[in-house]
Length: 131
Image (tube, rainbow, N blue to C red):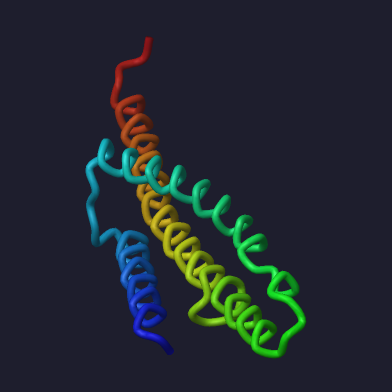
C-alpha cells in the first residue's frame, strides 16, 4: 500500500469512527456547522464525480504509437490514470468514499436532531392544556 493510499485509508477510518460515535450519541455538532459541512461535502462530491468521469479520458495508450518503448510509456500513463492502487481514478474513488462517510456522519446528526425536536414537540403538546 502506498503512503497516499494508507493516508486515505486512515482518513476513512477516522470518519467511520466519528460516524459511529455520532450514532452512539457521543458527539455533538452545532446545527449550523453541520449544515455547512454537509453542503460543502455535497458540492465536493459533485466535483469528485466529474473528476472520476474525466479519468477515462486521461489515458489513450494507443496514442503513443507502435514502438515497444512508446507502448510501454503508454501503458505506464494508463496505469497512473486509471489503474489500480496509486492511480488518479483509485485516489478519487477513495476520496469519494471518505466524503460519503462524512455526509453519513452529518446526516445521522440531522436525523438525531429531528427526532429530538419531534420528541420535544410531543412532550410540549402533551403538557399543554386542552384547547
